[in-house]
Image 1 (cartoon, each protein chain N blue to C red):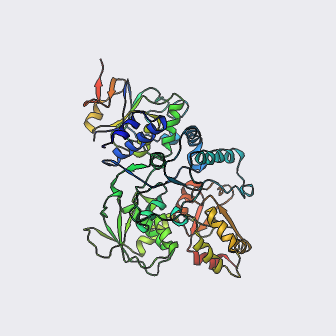
Image 2 (tube, rainbow over the protein chains, first blue to last red):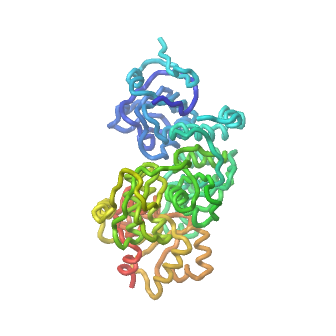
Image 3 (tube, chains in turn brown, orange):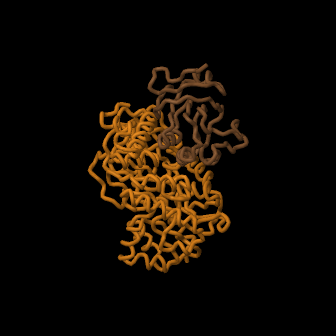
Amino acid sequence: MKKILVQGKVKGVILKSHKPINFLGTVNKKTGIISDETHDLFKKTIKDSILVFPYGVGSSVGAYTIYSLKSNNSAPLAMICKKVDLTVATGCALANIPLITISEKDFILLENDKKILLDTKSSNPITFLE
Amino acid sequence: MELTKDEESALKGEHGEIMQMAYRILVATGEATDAEKLVPIEWAHLSGVNYNTIGDAGEEFLSSISKHARVKVKTSLNPMGFDIDNVSNYDLNDNFISKQLSIKQSYEKMGVIPSFSCIPYEIFDIPKGGTQVSFAESNAAIHANSFDDLKTNKESAFSALASALTGKSPNSALRKETKPNLTIRMKVENPNELTYGMLGFFAGKVGNESVNISSIGNMDRRSCKSLCGGMGTSGTCAKFHFNEEETNSETVDFDEQELNKVYDELNTSDKGDLITLGSPQLGLEEISDLTIRLKGKSFKKRCMIFCPRTVKEQARKLGHINKLERAGCEILSDCCTCLTPLIKKEEVDSVTTNSIKGAYYLKNSNGVGVNLKSLSEIIKDETR
């Protein structure tokens, strides 16, 4: 389902995960590096990426982690999910990180390392660059 | 979601960064919960106070926004991690205490009433029927919707904070005429507050936004609170209806079998090293009742009682606190069993309680064993 949760316009490179992300406890809030060894983004940093993942899980306190990431300049440029969850929605709202949800079909099209423009004001918010 | 011109300009940042952030939270929450607009609210109750739950990230956030943020409507506050009057009796490190006091200060700076209570419905006057409020504490939101004729979403810490700063909240489903997704028939006989807590816990697992309960019987205040605390712990359902006609197509029974399932899930020990009463915190009525029941008795082990500071002060004037302390009770204000840093698994193996909400968090967060008993059983078994 397509929803604009937090508005914005950014250009960046996709970092995609097929697993949900628990921001409280599995993301280092200083560096943005994923510390959960069972996660498919283990040891990768979400800093300055366009983070694509199914949805967030875990405590709502995770929203503060997203805010801390931003304060430490280690936050993603934007987030794109399949499903809304209130932790990621409020975290992105606190930190002013653009957030949208998209359909399963569009989710499949977003591949790692592709460069995109995300513009929530556009009727077609995702444009592939190059 | 449709915004007014004024709300739109706040979202663009024309009313400052704090307002912009607050409206971003309201819009994100509203979109996530399919609200079509924002509505004014008259009272916000905030969670996100205990340093044990919000941690350094929360402390830093509150310290930063409190430089400029001020609440617009009456705003009350959930419990924190300890009672400053007796914190030295518990082994808490200085870092915890100073971070907790910083959180307290940030909220006070923003104009929040430092009530440190999870039972705002019992210690403040209830506004007239149908009033829109924003309660983040789950037992309080459920109590407000089900027993106090108020309207609230089951807010998050953030949406309630945004509501406090703007005086508005998304018009999500719970603010409208809700239709319960099913009816639960209460089939357990001679229920006490523990039974109602387990009924609530069961209801939270099967209810969507609201749930109907038939044959509920007569509940005293203790049982109503227990019912709300239980449901807030296990799900997102935030309103009880109590209608006898089962208009829904779906009906389920809460019988001895379901009761035992909940009991087996949460009761992990056959005895406790100490007792806790409160979660939700005890009100004056419960403290008075407890004082009467403990007349001539004293606890054989530690018994921690959690209540709001205002309740403790009133109870002291009435002579209850002296009597309870003589009966071996430790009475703590400003904090609660739920997510308390005062009970550590290094020191305590298991806790006896009549609180389902307390049991859930003692088990899953504190990592201690839980021995569930009703208040009557606790007094019978654990005093002399």
